[in-house]
Length: 272
Image (spheres, rainbow, N blue to C red):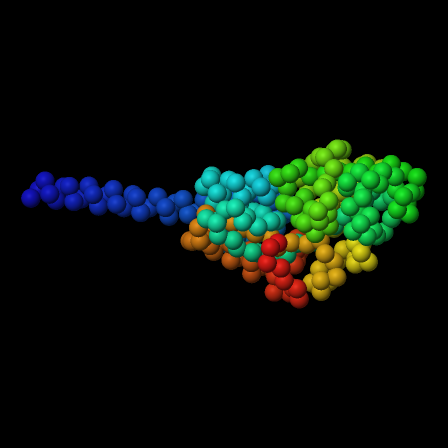
């Protein structure tokens, strides 16, 4: 009897440790992916941890492709992305906000707006001088994003259409780096999230007559935008679920960081 009692106590202890492990893991959340979404998630993580002392949230960038791949491999808890993940049906998609993307130029270019066709000609390499689109006699310097970038995917989908982006020129990975390089490079043009371009001093071009504003995204007058996604491997639970819900509901943080609440949108898309 004593042997059975000791065995039962041992099994009970093992069970207690096993049940405690997920609870501990649940309070350590790892997030990576979209650099466009990064400012909002970092800000939200800081606020959330202030109210939940037992929770530790680690946030990094790397791009939307990295976020999707890493969460699919279960290397992280949440993969942030500007794009959907149709090739990963195992991932659960939580849309948390809407983000606009601006086509930006060095302020010395002097051009305020372009048509989609003109932008396509620039990024395919057909247009090489700003005088071809009403600007000064100045070489166009294209700053691109890597293929893993969700920002690039959104730009390609909403502006380039079937036209392929030229692979020549400069490539920068992060939103902040793109903004810095365009600001320092005469004749430069690129594309970046509103969360990085607002207040940067860059010129945000109008596209097909629609200015790059939240109001025009909400009404459908400005085309370059996407939903921001927080992917989990299966439905989120515990602190992960609560943190995602916190991001979705924090209208003050969403708007402060240059994003739009999904509930404010007057247009919807199923594949962004």
